[in-house]
Structures are given as structure tokens and as C-alpha cells.
Length: 434
Image (tube, rainbow, N blue to C red; front, side, top):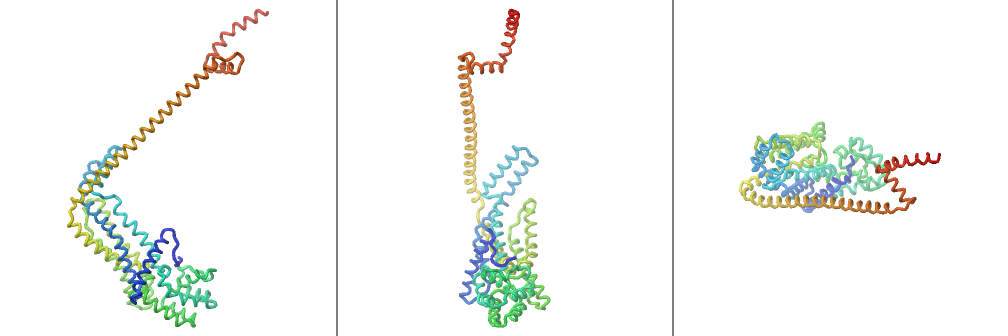
């Protein structure tokens, strides 16, 4: 995995935009004398969820109206149960669409937020895994040290040894690349991932830079750590290192990140209104709500701590939004919303009727045009045939046209009669000669 900025056609631009936003948030706190990426992630998460709130509101409204229309939906399903003929299926589809129009919801309404959040989540994985590649303010911490390492003779061989000792084989580097900027990015990738022992190895390898190395390491610790755990490394890796190094506080915090992320997921789910347990869709949703936090628990162990902080903060925000939205929808009059949607549904039906009539009219016009063109073609063909027959009737004996007449007569069966009649005359002529 290359830890420099990802250049994929979809996630690459998204990751760079998210990194740019985080960089501005980081600079805002830096102006206050606070240099901490974890705090930047928390504020960034709040901004993201505020931006997504209109979709959250729409999704909550979708859930409330879905529960309201559930009895009518069941009635339609019961009405057409075991009816598989084409007319029944078309009628069921039309009545179902009319019901969705009545309540002003879409069958895919609950999927929109997930479709938007998924690329954000995948892009954030890239950002948190290699923060300096996306947050230029953090990358600036390494600039002076990296420039001096690059200017040191034999740095490539020395860094390759440190890279192998640190067991960073999942980080692909090429310290002998021709482009200086690319090599410096690789140096940052390695230095950013070094553990405490790795930094000591770096000091031993570059003794003339030991003071600058200490300063850079101290600055990185102040900004890149959240309660003694690195936001760019996974909880599982840090738990293993902490266990063998007897760093029990780090072990506890690293294990706590997945637990908190899962707990906030459950908290937000508990705030969600329950649907009728007899409905198949509700049962599927209930199963998904139970499985998703469990998946989060296991996934959080294997992704950067920063992503776990994002999930935990997001779960708390969703729980708070859900709490207030529940109170909001308890107070509003759903009947008023349904009445307004009925008017919109009537307009939609009119538009669908107009479009359907336009399609039928177009089909009728095309059919008439085809029939008319065929009739015109037949008339033209008849006229040509009549004119050809007229020319053949006045053909001179021995001409090409007269020979064509003979061929035509033969094809039509007339030639057979001519042959039969002319045979006795030929025999008669032969006898007379004799």
C-alpha cells in the first residue's frame, strides 16, 4: 500500500477534499495554540453530520410515514396474494406506487444517506491512515527533518534498514526513485509510522540530526496521539505492542476505542422507533441493526484509531439527532403531511396519465404513418406495373420488348398454350414439303 495521497478516480478526489477541510480545522485550532488531530477529527465529524442532517431528517420522516402506511401496504399485499398473472401484478404495482405517492415517500429513500456516507467513510480511511499526505499542516512538521535526511549521503541504504527493522513491509517505498519530491514523500510515510523504538533507531542512524529528530517526534506526539494511542495506527497493532512492552495504559485505551465505537452505534439504534415486528422488512431491519454494531466492533480493531474516533463521535451525534427528531415527529400532525402529499400524488398521476397518452398517441401516429407509407408504395408499384404493361402491348415484333413479352407470357403460363397450338401447324408444314 502506498501511503502517499491516493490518486483513485473516485475516492482520490473525495479524500483530498476531506483532507483539505480537516487541514482548515487544524489550522483554526493551531491559531489557538492547540495542535491535536484527534480534536480536529471530532470537530470534522460534527461538521459532516450537520451537513448530512437534511438527509437524516428525510430518512427519519421516511421511517415515520412508512410505519403509518404499513397497514395499507399489507392490505394491498393481501389483496394480490398468490396472483401472478400480468394484469394483477401491474395493478398491484400501480396501487403500491399510488400509496407511496400518497405518503410522499420513495422505496429507495432510506438508501440515499448510506450511498453518500459510504464513499466518505472509505475516503476517511485513506486520510486517517496517512494524515501528512492530506493535511498539509501536519506534513509541514516533517519538512525540515526530511530535507536534511535527503541531503545526507547514503540516506537510502540507512532508511531501508530502519524500514525493515520497523517491520513496515505493508508500506511500499522506493528511496532510489528519480523524483526528489516522491522520495521525500516516502521518507515521510516511513517516519510517520515509526514507533518510539523506531525514532531511537532514526537518531542512531543520523546522529547529527538527533536534536531535530527529538523536536519533530515531540511535535508529532502532541498532535498525532489521542490519550497515548496513535490515530494513524490500528488498535490491534498498538495493543500487541503495548502488551509486549508492558504499557498497560496504552493497551486499555486501544481496546477501549472499538468498545466505545460499538456502544455509540447501539445507543443511536436504541433511539430509533421500532416498527411492527410482524412486517418482514421490519424484521430484516432489526437484524441489520443488531449486526452492524457487531461488524463495527471487529472492523474498528483493524482500521486506524482516527476512524474509530470518527465512528464513536458520529454515533453520539446520531443518537442526539434521533432523540430530538423523535420528539419533533411526535408533535407534528402527520395527517396534514399526508393531505399535502395527496395533492402532489394527484398531480403525479395526471402527469403519468399525460405521458401515457402521449406515448399512445405517438404509437398510433407511427402506425398510421407506416400504413400510409405502405399504401403509397403499393400505389406507386401498381402504377409502374401498369405503365410497363402498356409499353409491352405496343412493342414491335422482333424488338427487345416483344421478347420480354414472350418471357412474361411464359412465366404466367400463357406460353404453354401457345406451344400446344403451334405444334400441329409445324407438323402440317413438314408433310406438305414431303
